[in-house]
Amino acid sequence: MKPFSKKKSLETTNEFNQVIVGNSLTKDAWRRLKKNKMAVLSVIIVSIYILLAALAPILPIYPYDEIILDHQHLKPSFTKSSGELLLEKRMADLFTQAWRQGRLELTPEEDDMLWAWIDKSEANKVWEYMFQRGSEMVEAGAYTFSSAEQRNLDNLAKKLKTDLQITVNRVWHTVEETGEKENVEKLPVDQIVALYAHMIGSTVEIEQEQYMREIAQQRLKIIQTQNAEMSAEDHQLLLATEMDTMSEREKDRLVKENVMAKIKTRAKEIANTDLKAAAGDESATFPLNKEIAIQDTLSADIKATKMHDRRYYLGTDHQGRDMLSRIIYGGQVSIAIGFIGTITSVFIGIILGSLAGYLGGKVDYFIMRVVDIMYGLPYMLLVIIAMAIFGRNILNLFFALAIISWLTISRMVRGQIMSLKNQEFIEAARSMGAPTWRIIFRHLVPNSLSVIIVFSTLRIPSFIMTESFLSFLGLGVQAPYASWGSLVGDAVGGMTLYPWKLFFPAATMTIFLFAMNFLGDGLRDAFDPQSKNQL
Picture 1 (cartoon, helix red, strand yellow):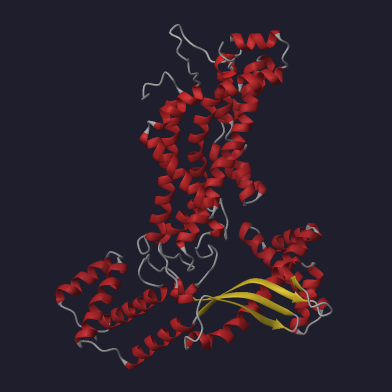
Picture 2 (tube, one colour; picture 1 turned 180 degrees about the vertical axis):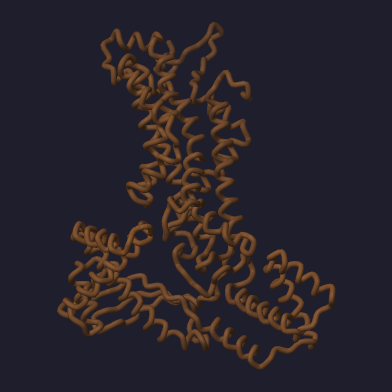
C-alpha cells in the first residue's frame, strides 16, 4: 500500500488523471501584462522615477535649494566645471564688447551673421561664436586683450580658485561643567537665544525684541504679497491680527529658525576666512570636513568645497541652483501629489460610490445629485478657490485636488456595484446573514478592484498635470520647494536664451506621463479578458 499523501489528495485532476492548475484573474492579468512590451517598459521607467525621488536625500547631488548667484544660467556640461564656464562666459562678453567697439575686426559676412542673430534675439549663438572666434584670434596673435581686460580676467581666475562653498552640518554647544557636546538645534529656544546673545555680546531681552520685530516684518511682506490690492492700513490690521493669534509654538519655531540662521552665517564667515588662504595655495584637499570654533563654547561641523569646481550636468537656473537636483526633488513633489491625490480621491469615491450602488434609494439619489451638482461647477475654478481659502502650501494642494477629484471614480464604482449586487455569490452572503459593510467591502469592492486599479493609474498623470498648471499660474508649490510644473513655469520667460531650463523638466515630466498612460492602457487590456487588444 502506498503511503497517504496529503498534497496529492488536495490536487484536482481531470479524466486523464492530469493535475489541473488553478488560475485567477490576477495571475492571468500579470501573464498578459508581461507580454505588453510598452507596459513593461513603463513599469521600469516609473520604478526608476520613484526610486530616484525616494533616494534623493542620499544621492550625490547638490542641495536643491542652495543658491550661488555667481552660477546663474550656466549651460549644461559633462566635461567643464562651473569655473571654466564662467571664464568662457566672461571672455565671450569681452570679445563681443570689443567687436561692437571696433577693436576686434571680423569679415563683413561674419558681421552680417552676428547682427542677424542679434535681431532674432539669439544672443547665445553670438556669445558662442564670439568666444570661439575670439580665442582663435588671440592664439593667432590677431587680437590682444587690453590691460583692463587682462586685469579683469586675472581677478576672475583668482576668484575662481579661492571661492569656497561652506555648508554647516551641525552646531555644538560644549557644557563647561561636564565637557559634553549638545546639538544646539535640539536645545530649547530660550537657551539658543541666550547662546547667541552671549556670542555677540548682547542681552536676551534685546535679542528677543529684535527677533519679534524681524518676524513681524517677514509676516508683513507675506501679507503685502498675498493682498496687494489692500491699503497699507489694512496690511497693518491683518499683521496685528495674525501676530495676536499666532501660537507660542509658532513664534518659538520662527525665532529658532532666525537665530540658527545667524549662528550658521557666523560659522560660515569664520570658516571662509580660515580656509581661503589654504584654497588659494592648494595646501588643503577639498572637499574638506572640519570642526571650527565659533566662540568659547560654540563650535560647528562644516564641509568646505571649492565653489567653482562644480559640474552642472543639466545647467543652472536664474539663482544658480542645480537643475538636476531641482528636477529630482521636484519629482518628489509631483509624484507625491499624483499618488497621494489619487489614493485620497479613490478612497472617497469607493466609499460613496459603493454605498450609493448597493443601498440605492434615497442614499443613491442624494449622493448622485451631489455628484451632478459638483460636475456642473468648473473643476479648476474650485481648486483655485480652495487654494485661495486654505492657503498655498503642499498639504492644502493635496486637499484641494482630492476633495474635487472623486466624482468620476464614485460613478464608476457605483456602476460596478450595481452590476454585481444581484449576483449569486452576493445572494449567498446575504442568506448567510453577512452585514452590509461586509458585503460591500469584502465581496463587492474586491471584485471591482481591476477597474479601480486601471482608473487610478490613469488619474495619476491627471493630478500631475493639474498641479503643473497651478504651479505655472503661481498657485501651486511655493519656494523653496519645486515641482516639475513650477520649474517649467519659472523657465518660460527665458526659454529663448536658456532653453535647457525648460527642456529638461518638461522632458522629464513628459516621459513620466507617457509611461503612466502606457501602464494604464496595459493594465486595462490585462484586466479585461474581453479586451480587443489582448495578446
